[in-house]
Length: 458
Image (cartoon, rainbow, N blue to C red):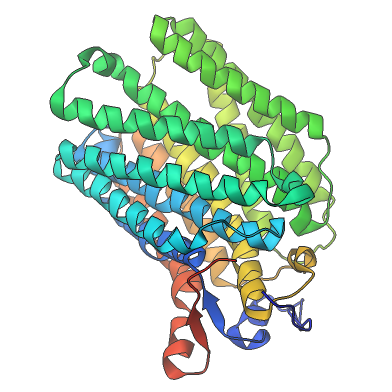
């Protein structure tokens, strides 16, 4: 890409409505690459669909039916359509924006996008319809798409030179967990249809492995890795300790390995030790979040900050649950009601708050980069509150109320509480989709905003 003259990206940093990021604030057309399409599909399609799916599944979840077709469909909408597709989109765009490297063979990204989207749809629809053969076929496609994407990403990192230091060590570990969870999930779907390994379904052992690898390994390590590398850049602050980040990684990997060993040997005490290790990692992470946010350069109202504080709050709640269960203070066996509530809080609370908070920084940053081709891209995220729209406060409160309401309804067997939470979460998803996925469409349709599709990322 060529380098243009810097433009006034934030003409009025104090503006709480975020008007500085409207299409008129930067030069050039709005350019969508296929990295953008991953993110757009996650925010504009999968997230609202997840809200609707939760409304359908909330009653059965509150009644303790965690493996109904609607619950399985909602879970995989959250993990594949919402979470993973957002990560894919951000990673595809971050390579040229932050690593300063081209993605090899990025002309294949449209086909990768099509394969991942179709495979995700097949998996979700297959689970919702009870067609586990279709879900297994979707899982096979997801495995192919994952390998394809990882190959492109590794190629971009390998060509980045010294800039590859921006990659946190948590990310390679997360990618390994992602490969494992897709392989395991495909096997589980196939086993549900052909039943060739019935023992793994006993006491939901296969489900525990799947959740540990997917939630703790893939999403948990990605969120921590993103925090350590991008949030300090965004806020112009240093982390308190790189050693603390390494310790968090070690604790997480020990916990994951312990879950595998505990499930394989039937040693429940190992699972309790893993819960305590995970709680310790979360407590350390809370300390890092508080340090970085307390030392940020600007004190303007910032939705990114608010969402990271929400992540810290969920971390404390989850750490208390993990430590309490690990120490034997809570007398339940996984993955019963407590496990379902914990997974819900982690995925719909902890993970979702981290994703939404970063979208307010990263999405406007990438739009500016591809529209204005600013040479000093590292300085762009340090602008105070680059996108702080008033509707974002509704997303913050509704999404947290939704996650809390759904979890509470599941814990106290109150379907109406769970359904109310699901409705709040769905409303938050629709507002976020409007702000980040659809708000730019009317200016494009009327011709007030130039628009182009770039088939290559770099």
